[in-house]
View (cartoon, rainbow, N blue to C red):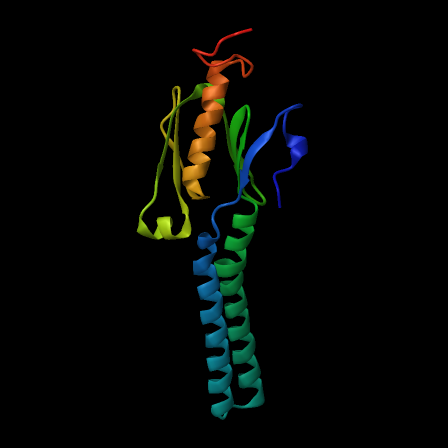
Length: 179
């Protein structure tokens, strides 16, 4: 789901619109697979034990509720958090929004950006993701984790910052003859 265009200023163009990289969902998917295996194991075990119908029903309901709560907490909520997190670069600002019930966000005007850095380790490089670090005029550096194609985003952001500081995109580069 893309960032809502009605939340942008008039004539504001989107350069990058991204969710965190899909590798952030690997853990929740593994947890769901383990949960399914545990449910099957619990059913098999409950079938092998001789209990009265009331006890078997009570244990089955308790295990089902516990598993459902754990699956929602460890699998569904990370996916919802992932899908509602947006990292957007426009021709005017950097926008970061996250949250479902309580939203939080930050906007950084491009004219206030001092430094743009990225870092990624071996695993991040294999997945083409990393951390983007933006240092603005008076704030501590902000780190945005799991940015897909972080090197490309870094280059695009640097280009937009350069354009914002230059002020006029129609000015020919130095050394270009004017007619």
